[in-house]
Structure formats: C-alpha cells, structure tokens
Amino acid sequence: MGKIVSNFFISLDGVVEAPDQWHFPYFNDEMGAAIGRAAETYEAFLMGRVLYEEWASYWPSQSDEVPFASFINNVPKYVVSNTLDKANWNNTVVVSGDIAAELRQIKERSDGDIGMSGSATLVRWLVANSLLDELGLMVHPIVVGHGQRLFEDTATHPLQLEHHEAFETGVLNLTYAPATS
Image 1 (cartoon, rainbow, N blue to C red):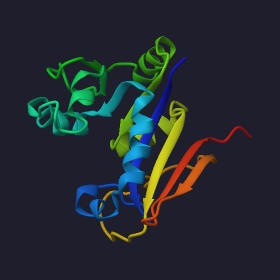
Image 2: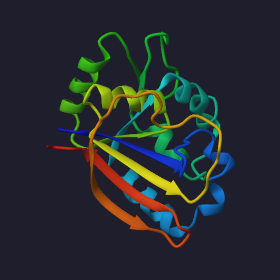
Image 3: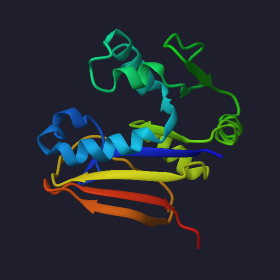
Image 4: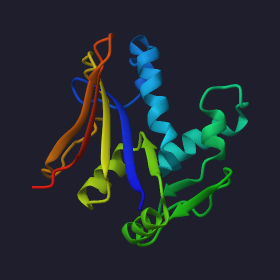
C-alpha cells in the first residue's frame, strides 16, 4: 500500500507561499541530495488544482535537461479538483467526487509513495481526513512575515517526529507522521 507524502519549504513563521522569493539562498548540495532521495520513492505525484495549473503551464515545455522536468513530465500525476473537467498534461488524472474514497483507492493500488509539494490547502484537507501519511518540512532560518502559512485556522492534529537532520545552511529537514497515540 502506498503512502501520501507531502514536502514543503517552510519559513520559521510557517510561510510556504512563494518559496522562490526566499528559499534559494539556502539551497545547497545537502538539500538537493535530500530532495533527490525523497523523489526516488515517488511512483506518482499528487497536487491541488492551483499548483496543477501553475505547473502544467510550465513543465511540459521544459526539456529533459532541466532538472526535475523529466521526472514530473513522465510520472503519473493526480490533481484533486471538483472544478477541473480534464487534465491535458501527460499522465494526469483528475480526482473528483468522493475525493477521500478515490485517494484511498489510489493508495491501495500503489506500491510506492505518492509525493506532493506545495498545495497547502490540499495538505490541510488530507490531514483533517487522515489521508496524509508523512509530512516533510525543510524549515528555513528566515522569517518571511507575509504569505500563506501551512496551517491556518485548523483543528489540532498531533504529529510525531520520524526523522530530523540539520543542513550546513541552518535548514532543518524534518519528517513527521500522524501520532499513533
């Protein structure tokens, strides 16, 4: 059975929006290797409609020489949306209707991880519906001060730390799972 695994670049004040504006000074080989190790376990990729529309307008036109392009253009993709009728990006299926039941079926059919990046609204929904199996956070030593935070106006959901490491840049790579007790 597969797992839904979400990963975020996140600031100390919880901001996940527009990491392209604050993340890159902290990117190094250590972080690249950690991201690569995570991606190696993905047999599919899950995203919300907004991220899908952003990425579908960019990635299909990128050549395989662009890092991540070959992976994301060829991996099976699932986009969660009750407003999107169809998805034109290669290997993409729209998940709609009873989304929780559909995602449970996708997890049962999967042998590897179903990765995610971005889609904070979807992650909050997955956590609330006990569908997120793992939450990876690369906590950057910066206070952004504005932007969407990962958890805003949510109920309490206990998590347990599964893995941690600190990069030379001061970024903490943390992995959480739903608490078992």
